[in-house]
Image 1: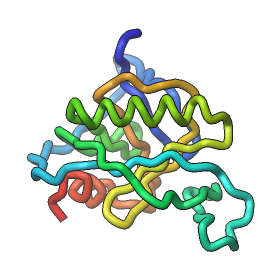
Image 2 (image 1 turned 90 degrees about the vertical axis):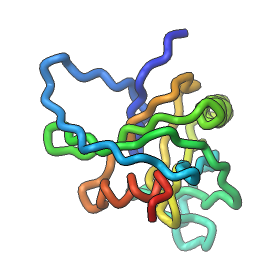
Image 3 (image 1 turned 180 degrees about the vertical axis):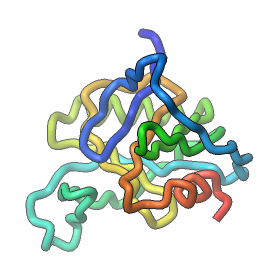
Length: 159
């Protein structure tokens, strides 16, 4: 299967399919520290947000994972695409292997499973996974209420 860029949003995982004429602008890439990572875990949706273990992630209840696994990041940068901020992440070899393993687990677990992504203390996404991601690169759609540059610095281990 060919590797492909994947867009991770809070609710949907879909192939990144932008036309060749789409306008995008990338921020200057920042060198990562040796601590550059995106924390990943597989969890389930939950209906009762009043439960202490159920947290809202972009309007959807998700059981807060007990533990996350560190997926090493080689580089990350903000890309503005038609007014929407995205973070392009390139994983290290071991980070990509972890992403593949966890997305395979989530895809096999059914429609209530979510791939939860975290940097520092911030959950940056909870995504329905329909198929295994076999790529070193993903794009994370950033809600307009979040600071994409600060998230990149956190992923890169700079803050």
